[in-house]
Image (tube, rainbow, N blue to C red; front, side):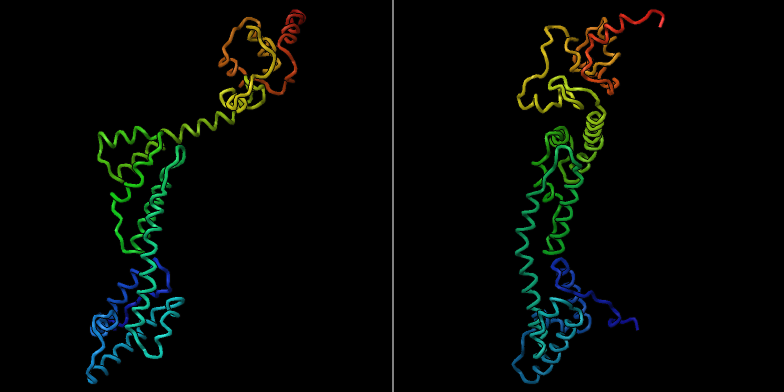
Amino acid sequence: MGGKDDYRMAIFSGRLEDWSSWKREIESFIGAKDPEMADIIVGFAKMPTSRDDLSSYNDKNAKGYFTLKNYLKGAAAKLIEKFRLNKDGACAFQALKDKYELRGETQKPLLMSEFSQLNFSETNDPGQTFEAAEELAMKMKSCLDMEINDSILLTPLINKIPSAYGMVKVSLETQDLMSYSNLKSKMINHFVTKIANKVKDDQCLAVSFYGYCNWCRKYRHKEIECLVKKNGGGRAGPPNNGNKWAGMSVYLATPIMALAKEGAIMSDGEIEAVEAVMDVVVAKDCTAEWLSLLWKRRPLGK
């Protein structure tokens, strides 16, 4: 009780990523049960020519076949069925190695190619790229038994640092140790403290603007965001002839703007600031001159 036969071996179904660990485990398992059988299965012991030795060899080879079969399922189990008649454990194990280790070697350039395609974004969380790199490293270890150290992880990433992280790269090159762990921590910290907040602020500003564009006169965006201007389109609306308040209908012609017109001279930036807090339900074809006239003709004392 509690001996070798109580050990619970993993079952291999043909998943490439499970092969390396299962192979090591089955070799150790068979070796613990019967070292001579293990030598036969892994190919260390060749078929003897002596009839006396051949009988023992065939017996252990057959036991090795059924041991393998007990811990296989799916595609891997079907693969060794052709060796069932001869109960050839050594050939069955070799067939498994040929199938899955050969596939692993063909996967190596594909996985290395995935490393070279890793990239960062100017505005997105770099943690996603680091997670992808570490997942690939684990896959290389599992499928190919290939150890991916920090130096190998760093190589495809260091030359892809976005311009927004320029200070991070300079710091690593001049002050700190250039390592994968340092690159990861500094880029994630820079994203959280600098970029993420800026992106969030920009999004909030874009959503909260309720004025008209100074360039194309369309609603809900500013001149700095205007696609018409960016694409070379001309300014819309009548010329102002040096009067910042002429053609006020192209802005939001509200009482607030009309009162501001009475004596204020404002920059475009100041106009935008006023527009952002105006009552946008006022009809936009109303002119500032008309509102000013109404204000001057209002009954006194009211």
